Image (cartoon, rainbow, N blue to C red; front, side, top):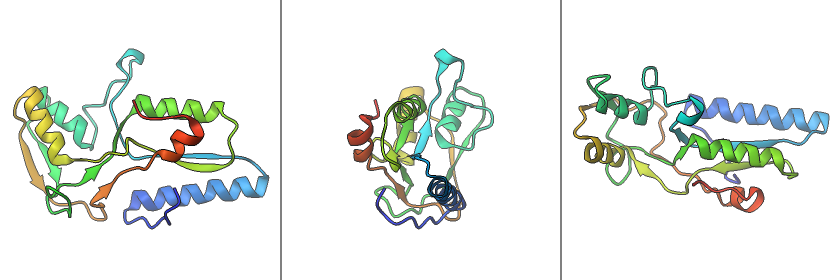
Length: 171
């Protein structure tokens, strides 16, 4: 939360602008705010009738599941030239139910205006996710495509402030 924001992707730039707008509006109107920064959301809530979207997602996890379920023939890995332990990007995947819990906790607490990172504090590489799916469901057809422009090598949250101030941690 305290690191200077210097996004390298269009999404990161948009999120930074949104945060600035929220802070500026809150200051001008003497309002409190809570900004929750999630990292790589994954999963769904099947009990609530909100499963992971396997048809229209551009994200790795639902696409791997779709290939494993026979819903599509292959998944494209976006690059293998990252400066990481296995050459694939590393992300801090967090389940959407954990994100929902954090939002509820933030709404129910009287906390000062601030920004909180939400994550597991652990990064997992795309290659490690593919290996897991291969072991659990059988081999999936993965082809390596071009790296997305502006895609950072690694994004991992330090969620210690969310634990301290909100009493939240990923389950």
